[in-house]
Image 1 (cartoon, one colour):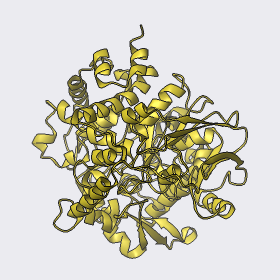
Image 2 (tube, helix red, strand yellow; image 1 turned 120 degrees about the vertical axis):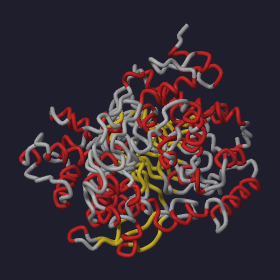
Image 3 (cartoon, one colour; image 1 turned 135 degrees about the vertical axis):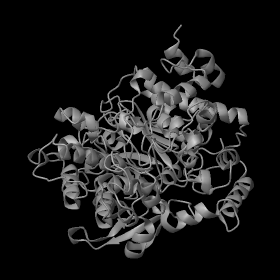
Image 4 (cartoon, helix red, strand yellow; image 1 turned 90 degrees about the vertical axis):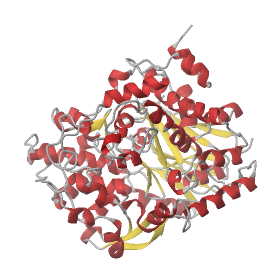
Length: 622
């Protein structure tokens, strides 16, 4: 079978057993890999309505067919699970070295079930898996644990691990790879911690992925490189990403009100200045902090950067340039323009294993609550949490990382904390319980449907009309009629991106249509346009069906009123804007032919798309 090892590893932490399962070639064709293949396995392996932290809950590390091949930007793997934050389906993508390293061991995916009595890690050594005692690593930060793993196992390893955030089963906990790459959204690190699983470590292995048409793959790579060269259509975005990564346009996003201000309640100019925003953009921070560029496996762009921080007790050479999303979370959303503080908070999340978006969003929620008198300083362990107070931000962050005082409920993320503390729900800005990313749906209404109704909610990098649509003229982007076809068409690229293992930036950094050509040259599948459309619908529907099986229907998929301008802002670029999010959903589901009231796909849709017999069995039992 081209493009795959053909082996799936299933680990049972309760029984301390491993099983190897052959990958069905039909499953490879129908589900490809990543989030989609992971959804098919979890749909089979997890009973309906299994709590995220139960022994029967399953956590998967799933590669795509590009991982471990020559395909440019083909390093991303997916962590799949049920989310403790949303109580529904969750997939979170991660770059770095782990995906290719796992494939080198001879497996295409690892699924983990059960709960260990004591902390363990899984070592896959040259293709041979074993459980090992993780007591010496438990309680360590990701930096400390990675250093210990390399001391004990050698430098040539790749580690997907949790920090103390995951060990404490935080709803914001990430799975960390290479100490700064995170599968962060939705709390998969908390699921990993509930199982007492510190890490999955890959060492050695000589598996080689058989490629159907190596010459075609090489030509695809050449076309991609030419696309980003001077004169190529991708010249400018490639240049931008190489130079400043995702931080390059942060300040402009703040001033357009795409990025959030004051927990999404403020406005640029009125509440935050251009100078504060500009101070965090890469062109301002790189000259002061940058040591070198960083990139994922097989990436020639290297959009990351290692930073040197000279700031009191946080002085270090082991920091990274915060990504755009982290800048929004720790910058404008907290009214913060201090670069040292953003780098410190970003590094704490990497060290302790947290998703920066939910971490920052939770602090922003708490800050608003405090400034409205909902919480007192005593309830915040004596912290005077004013907007823009950098010492206060760091103090709250340290409480979360230590899981003490106010940090204990905050580890449940904002919605969980509001429920645990019994107040503050009026200040929540979430989609189905998860904090929003740093691109706003009032600025880009296309994101409202994605945030609210994607099976993995609160993501700006999921199928739909996408982030670039926000740059459309107002008369275009605030027209809520006939959006269904364009919205559904947006599924094609993103569902395939999450399945094949190519970085999402490939949609504009690489040559047009490259995802399917990469997959076909590697696997030999030779998808027709009709098959690619069916794959996109199949992938979306399978993830959605996981939530339907949990008992959720359209009425249960919610987004905070503030996120869609209800009521509208009174100041700034988005003054008076309200999004008709339910109309957008009507258009989307209507185009697909789904039931508008329940968001349940009809049987003939499922049969036509194919590969969804398991869903038909649950939704339409004989």
